[in-house]
Image 1 (cartoon, rainbow, N blue to C red):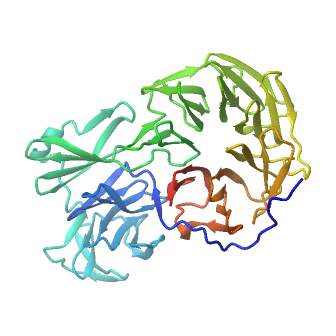
Image 2 (image 1 turned 60 degrees about the vertical axis):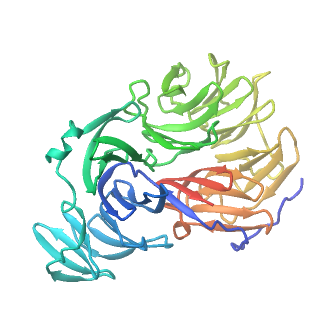
Image 3 (image 1 turned 60 degrees about the horizontal axis):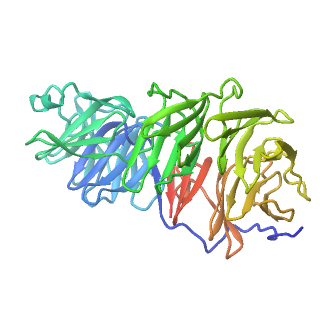
Length: 487
């Protein structure tokens, strides 16, 4: 029994992420603004500022409520937006916006050389860009607008080629068009779920689309994809972050799926395995097939893992093994515990539950409680990971580390009490150990041997971190409000 590290209380480290990018449900478009080669989207999930030349996001911000209007200043230094009747300004390089004042339910938001403008109920009001309502006034003719004063009506004859003003997508179902804005000979059409379609008005042909979003409103699970990307799951949705493109799927609109909650994902050669509230599914070539488990695991599949030809399943009070993708064998746990995660060893599986850590050997079907010398694994073992040949598991008093099938345990105390603060996820790489908790992301710098905490002012869109995946030099962080990339 060796102590891996002494207790470290300092939250200062040489390790530091330099960049962050938050992504929410940006595929549902309320309004859009075009300034030179910058496209600003007001969406149900927040604000997205997008560079049309590089096809890369310039700035994002995830909000709790839908954003009704948004526009960006020339030079992309500032973005102004309206949500829940409040007017906000977001600076370049600043994580949180500045509140400028209450404007209510407006029809359009404008920008001129000196002022911001609000249009509502046929009245114009002038605002200082630093905040402050200057009252009614007449805007200059070169004021740039987003909202009713710059969008085209779908009754306009030039938009007749878009009729019937919706599109059917096999992954998202029927998707309505929401707003259309013309910029010279290019038409930008916002949709309710698929981002922005770009058309050439001279040929009436679609020439591009802009989709930079995740479908689940909350991220519950992240999993490496076999193509080098990342799978993203949660309530009512699934998103694939691929090497070349990003696409999403609405789980509730698919007649061959229809589950409300996706708990876990596992990408294997035979397809993507999905653990959900309504059972076990395999997704392959855009087709779902359901594996019959509901009679024997009636509470849904909460955890997935694999060893060789075995697929391990976790549920409430039970676990199972699927052999060769067909034959399911289920067992009841010795105690009424919920399996939150399964870690696969060389020949065993580790069941992480709220009542402790269990080890399962498939050759004997023996389940036993794993007890460490310090008794840190006695209860509330909810999160862990396997990295190289070692297991990293959060216990009642901190992180427990051991080699697979070894009996030598090492310990790392955390700067918070795991019994009073939920830990949802653990990730590891050569540089650091990452812990996703209900109050932020904690990173242990292996070189400096100390901790640093990341919260809202460090780039997280929410401090309740549900899952983590290391993807090259980027950490994918799934939160209660969407996805954050740190690098």
